[in-house]
Amino acid sequence: MNRKPLFLDRDGVLNKDVAPYVTRLDQLEIFPWTGPTLRRLYEAGFDLYVISNQQGVALGLTSPEVLNNVTEAIQATVRPHGFEIKKFFYCTAHDGEEHPWRKPNPGMILAAAEEFGFDPTGAFMIGDWWKDMAAARGAKCRPLLVLSGVCKGEEYRAWDVQPEAVFPTLVEAAEYVLKDEGGRMKDERRRMSAEG
Ligand SMILES: [Mg+2]
Image (cartoon, rainbow, N blue to C red; front, side, top):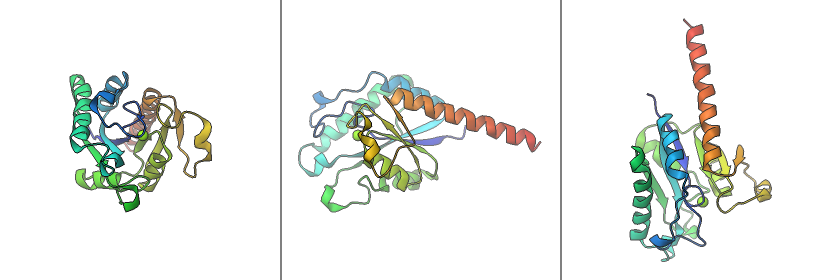
């Protein structure tokens, strides 16, 4: 199967957003739907990449060990479903550094594309904040907003960069992705049979 990339923000998408940062493992609350939903995406042919700003590391609030432990805890949630998230990209730089990886910059998506050898154009990026939408657009991806994190309502309408679509949680966003993929596959089959 020709696998496709799908990008996911972490906090507010896979787990409950904790203000200002997840600084201890016992603060991590992975949403109950994360494992089963990611499995559906994985089984539909998507390779999953986490694209996450973690400025808390630069600020000394989150230790690199906690960051690794959170990564491992999320992998441990999906592993029983028979797969893993392909890679977690974290930007641990301070906001003031203007690091190319730090969202709203698209650097982490572009780094994933470079490392794994794919074109990110048209891939989905699911996030809960305007920086996710902007990073997605910057990499020519399709931004989907979920309201399970920082943005809980209509305030996104004031953002400069608008999502393609808005959903309560990852569950409904995944439905949209799977429907889109189903339609694309049908078109592809139609095209191939038309070409004989
Ligand atoms: Mg987030």
